[in-house]
Length: 77
Image (tube, rainbow, N blue to C red):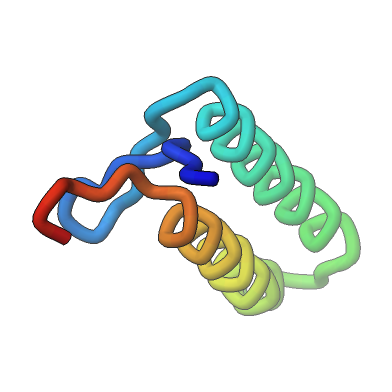
């Protein structure tokens, strides 16, 4: 079964279907929630950003993996 949820434009995976858009919105919402949660427990700006960057990298990694396995590939690929 071939899933065509994303298309690749350079190094970014853009949503190509409703499922792709849902995944993008969920990833963005989780990143915002994660930032607010970390910020509420942090004591400084650097503490917030240091902890948030790690979470943002993990969210980006999962999004990229999902995009890689569900992208619409061209005929020659």
